[in-house]
Image (cartoon, rainbow, N blue to C red; front, side, top):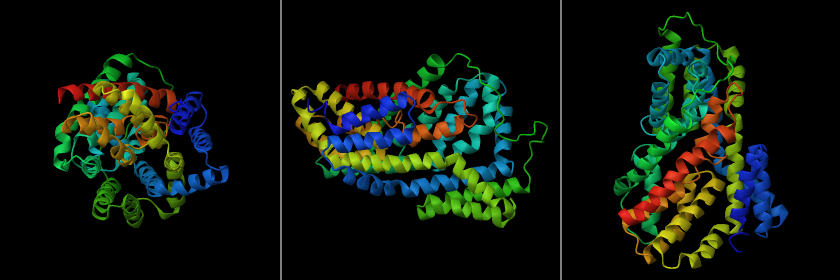
Length: 434
């Protein structure tokens, strides 16, 4: 009964039900946060105070998305984004799988080589929607491909966001009793990368291989007869993009990088100053919703933490483990799924789970590789599929540019099924293989 009435379990289940019933994600998060607080015996006034104060946790991320949305709009106005889309279309011709592979590759690079995360999606995807429609590509397959590219690299590649994720894993596991170096993590987590790859192949070649018809709704001004040549403004915009990445890496501040990029574009008059307000408004329209969902998700996460539900949930499942490794690993993974679905970030879940799970893994005699894999999987579970995760919000921001892609049913449900199920299966196999 403790498990059933745990504030995290009830709030996350409520969040999923509300979203599946097409309640707006923002409202669903707020309602679920209030439910979690009340079940956790927090006064209603305290719930809202905690919720609002917690929103600041994602303030930098939200600002980044707004500024990068404006930068994406500027790339469209200079003609660079449509030009890139046309070049990609010229390469793929009529091969839809090549297009999906290219988008997957770009998503992977956005996490490691050029760590701009989801910022590339509103730049590249909207101009390509017409091509996808022509090829009758099911956008659910593209959503899975983008989610794969956003998620898999930080699990298995020790660079960019992957280095941060694996560093968090190593530090938190070491702090709680098992010594493991950051450089060792990818030697184990590649196994989870294989799980994600299996999920992607099933999504693209089995689940969503059939043609799907979409209306041709104009979202970008693309001149079909325009020559595929770069002009001065295109080169300035490319330079601005490179400087955005350089400044981000130098200062570790994505908002500052985006601001520098916009400064170069306007300073060199690649876009006239009188269009500045229009671009910022377009940036807010393009990424503002994603930014605000991230703010509200941080508030929701803070309420969940304040209830003490994670500790209580782990304590309540411990008696059911009964000395069985398989049962113990399964329960830990399911708890991780609930926590990450609620918090919406794998990175934020690691410190919460490691302090509770490492002692359990030690007591059950898990090997170091198995411990790393189970905790990594428990943290990563739910990131794909969570209505409040940038892994799902990002693909929707691009694929729904013409209003024909539903966030829950076309992004969250497909990514949840195709990535979380393989992650659970492979993590359980790891307990016996490693």
